[in-house]
Image 1 (cartoon, rainbow over the protein chains, first blue to last red):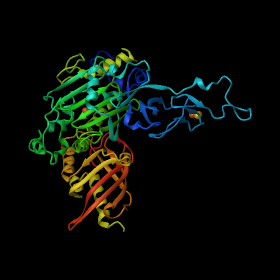
Image 2: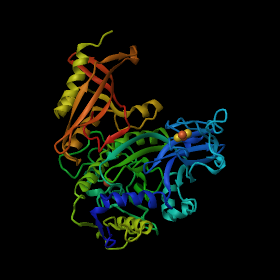
Image 3: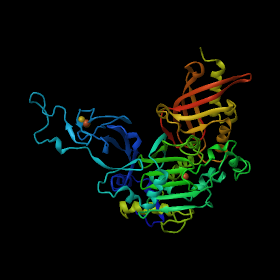
Length: 404
Length: 153
Ligand code: FES
Ligand SMILES: [Fe+2]
């Protein structure tokens, strides 16, 4: 496959196993940062959590205050080491043949290493100190743990760029605590889902709930910000805070459709908790992490590719320890807007599949991303596909211009 | 105490109404101030409040029906509920009716899938004109939703 120009994306990119395999090697295990989990899940010494990066099992552990991450794979025959979602351990111990590792990942024990009564055992040239778990570089940014397979990668903030980093700090003024988690299996290539998040053009059209209730019209003030690398971006819009219940009654929120209004609009209430009137911020961190602020719903979406035609999205909803009851209630009510069952986001689960179904045997056809021109720079307009072009620019920088 | 037949009928009729896409029939099973939540067993086990759907009044349920009927975009589908025997957990104010379920999802273009398993945790109100849900929590066994969850469970 060859990506012809920054404005055309061959459908083959969504169905080719060869491309997927290269993404697994060169992109996801290359110089990129991935979401691992919340620092708040690993506060206790020797606590661990298991997660995945693009289907690769990962274990993250608090080793006396140092957070370490490893591929959750025994060096002997490859069994998983930690099976539970979370737990506490003083060493890694493999269930299969009992090999053990310290929390720095060094192989410390091999069952029957010297055999039994001189019989069996490992050969003389085997040396435990030659073996350790494959480790990741870890960084804690604003209470979120990120990991990279590339130990030479630049620090998180440099990788994200100043604007994207500021956008992350904006929605993480304190370390997050988990308020709930859910997951969604979408029947499309992972890139279709990620592109969807870069697609500021679709939001107020596909998600008709937004426009119906005037929550995110393209005429609202806002814009998109794209980092220099291209693949990370912020799309945002502003809305005035409605001060009390009476100002966002059914009359004021009368929909564009004459016959439709919410009988109980409390889920639409927006509290301007960051004092900047921004009521919507979709932030993507190349390649597999999305941060959303939709009113007071705050969430990290962890994107997990599951083969060429499936992607799982894990929604990690968070808040803060010092949330007022009012804010906590708003986050709770706004669960109705977001996630797999959300009024404003459920369509993303369906539309990716609509594209995917048309991507096989597309006879060399390509989709176009020309809205807003050909560049991938920040703009006050959201009627643009610049952020999608930015995604593909960074994608090609990682995988090569001629990726097949 | 055994499960009153009126309660068992309410639970059956409510699932049957959803399966038939009879949303008015579904809404009729709830009191005006009914609470209705959908969450996962893992969130419930950890005491985490945010799940999938959170309604504190019947009006919010009416809104959901109106939205999925007129505003939201998704591929047409329906469900088939298979309910197991309702049993009673706890007593007094803590008493809940528990009904394990399996829900299959039927679409025109794809094979039917097992969409969700879990249990209903119900509290009901007895009135002169019948029994209705005053508090229903739908607890899903698995975290993963295939594609989307538009129609309530
Ligand atoms: S696979 Fe781990 S000890 Fe054999
Ligand atoms: Fe979307």
